[in-house]
Image 1 (cartoon, rainbow, N blue to C red):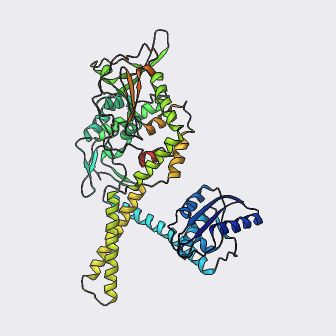
Image 2 (image 1 turned 90 degrees about the horizontal axis):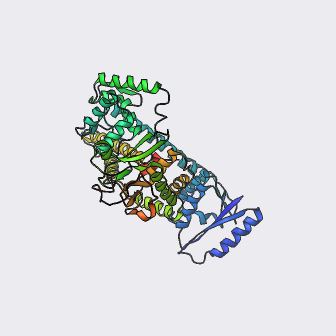
Image 3 (image 1 turned 120 degrees about the horizontal axis):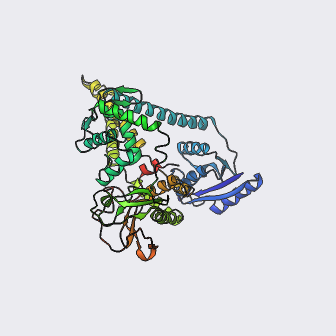
Length: 513
């Protein structure tokens, strides 16, 4: 059985058993019991009356890795002198399959300790269940009023100050146009390319992709139908798409779905929405064709050169440009030092608390303080005709703040460095020969690619600067590639303006392994 040793002495009692003595007796205990010591954690000159001990906290975190089953201490008070902290952290260790044992005294789990630990675990479970009920109750109440319940906002709508859905005059015409184009015979990929060439974005500011357009065409909310879990209210929100047009689109979707392998047979161009023409700044879109010999040729071509013939950029071979970009991405995911730095930056970003969440917590604290003051006054006999109404109002404010806090915490989960590194290292296991896995890696790491005539510029999601690959490195005598001149792009390389240059939590959730 694997074990670790935790040793500590406090600054207020230098005559305590020395660290060396504690380690010696703990090791002797381990030898006697046939235990394998796999690590030590030492806090010097720190009191056990607080849990603010770096090595202690590291040990608690490391216990989740399942590398040891026992924590050996010289005496139980080395672990904690605070009964609440002791029970709380023993509960955490127990959850991770770890026990605390003493090398010099028999561990006695007294009735009080067992009761306290059970109460703490029960309170935590009760609080979690109660909070979930409050959140769901609040969201269901919102749904019955057809109000916005958080999460991603549907393209075509905005939310007013009362949390009601309103038609967005900017993006709603895009939605109607998508439905009309599909009804007129355009494919989803045709629509995606057209939206990309026009530089149109979703309500989140992201380029339209196949899945987003397909989901849009199926979404009954555009008929004005409000939906949340089991709550369905026709006419609950403003209608964007007429019923006749919506039905026509559904019929065509059904017909195309029944056609054998139509969507499955489409080409996978993994740099779509990432690759830009260095001459004019337009998207470079994928196209394929068959030569007289029957061979299939696949290229990326400037959208303006393809549609309007207003750009002189020549096509570039699909395999050439995709292989080059994937080689750069491979170098990133194999660089453990770089991945560690990315994780550190993500931790720093998470540390910057959401201003709205901070304000909600202040409101919750103020409401709770006012409630306690009011209860104290009532106990002293200070009661007026408005006391009950004031108390009910404060309770409602406190509960509303709790629900909003929980919703924002659910929407913006926090990750430890270990979780982040686990996610990133899982990416190393992806099969780079599969287009779906290639797309996942590119979406995670690459922000944009600009193809000039004499160089390639790749901007990444995890650093502000970009990588420039000169012509001397990338020219491979491709007759289909025009690499003889350089014109700066008209667009900012950071397409997602206002976004953080490092990974966002939402993106990590999207590609959670």
